[in-house]
Image (tube, rainbow, N blue to C red; front, side):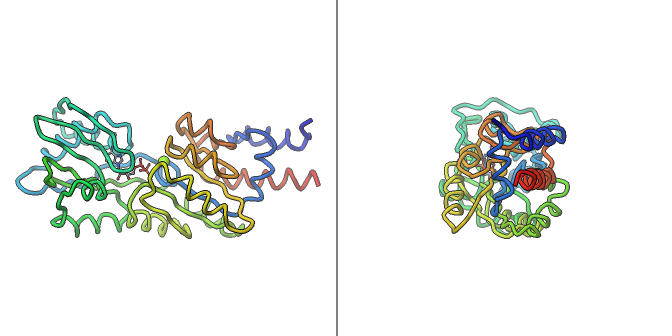
Length: 293
Ligand code: ADP
Ligand code: MG
């Protein structure tokens, strides 16, 4: 039988938008001493916007948005949606793409007007042997301000870069500060590059970061932290990419209007996407189990 205190606890949670799947998760959450956060959609709002468009060679800003926007029509990535939105805002007529391919952790590719277009990160450019030296200073500047840089390549040549900015969630800093007061170690885990991850971690006050983590490797990082002595690890995430890590963590916490798979994989769901509800969930857990003792 479920103890009354647990039923009261989960009931109270539900009223404030904290869905707790079973008493075990409620009990574990106040024992958590390491919390790993996904970046996009978890610590940030998850709606990046194109704030910079820098063309190279003899291309225009329009060219950059035409090729990147056309290709990104086939992508569900928030970066892709932001690029399509910007192209539409600039009233650029996007075209169809042949042989579209998504490369998780790198970007996308396809054929447009007989040219091979690649849109993605630096790792992708390097994998494809595309020279990006002319853009390196601008890329570095954008990244160290916490922006994500997307490179646009056409037939093996860099034709432009796009800088995308995402806003931090309200109370992100305060939540992290509270967690540190509760002696909880904090980590940022992202597929994004090192410089951007470092800038975001710094601006929020997160203690450690893991960058350029491929979707398939997110759960390996959780295992690494779990192997530390007495570690009880929670993972907070919203995306399909996060689902295996949410399952692997001692407590998986899905946040907000996250993807169905993330919600299914989690033990606790913060329905409204509010980070501060994480503290509320921990306090609720503590109160419930003190009552039971
Ligand atoms: P995250 O959800 O942390 O961004 P992903 O694995 O989805 O992790 O992506 C990792 C990186 O790969 C992104 O930060 C971006 O640099 C690049 N990327 C992935 N998909 C796209 C896309 N559709 N357009 C541009 N870049 C992309
Ligand atoms: Mg995410």
